[in-house]
Length: 317
Image: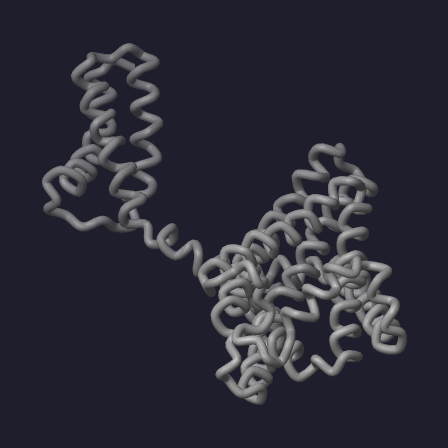
């Protein structure tokens, strides 16, 4: 096709885009996305057919302005974070409820068993912690502390916020990444964290520190414990994709599983950041009555249940 025929054929759509993007005398309507896609194709054709530099420059300028206009006015991209929170994350959790259930069992059963064992027999704590760490842990939850759960070397809430972020993200990432070892790593870290947390809870309860320990974990527990389980679920999904790729190649099986796993991990990171914030600025305070912390913590658990049960349901999940 000669250049003159090419220009005549697409002049109407170029005039529309030019008025929209340059003159700004018309408003965008439903024709814009289609015209813009066609414009990109027309620019490629013009280059391929070696039309005049003036025409190529003109089309290239329209494409550049159109790209900017599209992403500046496409509010869908502005609210992707909201779509993720309302739809993508809770739907990914519900789609993978089997992995979530298995991960919860691998985490909670050792936690309850070790908590009971350490409550009945105080010596059990030394099977997972040495004497110095047990002493430091007991000091963190003493009733006379100005800030519960704070390490002695940490002077400010902001410093502890950073410490909790590093610690929480590290636990979540290790639990998830362990799934690449055919799920074995995720199983190990879920069980290990369940044993460790259960041992601490059982030991402190046996010592009579429950009045400081449980109000401390009430606020951030729903975010942190749930996030650990979800990290394990994402890791188990990767492991299962490697063990049972089905009709897909290992690469494609891992790729398909990774889509949901990464979505879950984005949500997990957000939950762990919230947990770190609550732990640093709310859980550690001693000026708030325990009953208030229990009510807030119970409210968070209720919100988690409602959110992961109902949010995004209209998408058919």
